[in-house]
Length: 82
Image (cartoon, rainbow, N blue to C red; front, side):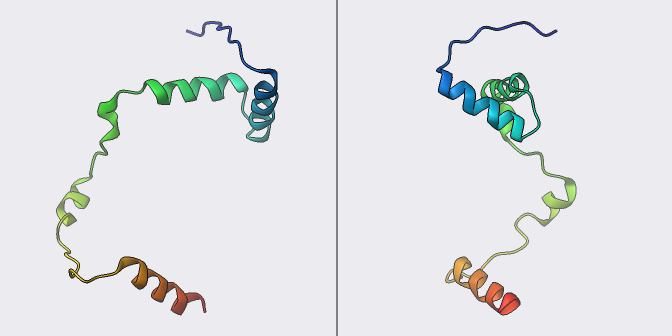
């Protein structure tokens, strides 16, 4: 059930929000509603449910202690794109 809500917001913020909503092809009401849903969402839902396949793979790989992820990523992306 939808219910009307009156808010007091600075005019400049409203104008920017309306432009943003128009650019995203959404209504301002739906943007605000979704934002409030995110704010009030139960904290229990923050935990991601892992599928059985992902659970079976979890912990199957252990990187060496001196493994530098950023260095390795940079190296591989350089080889791929340069």
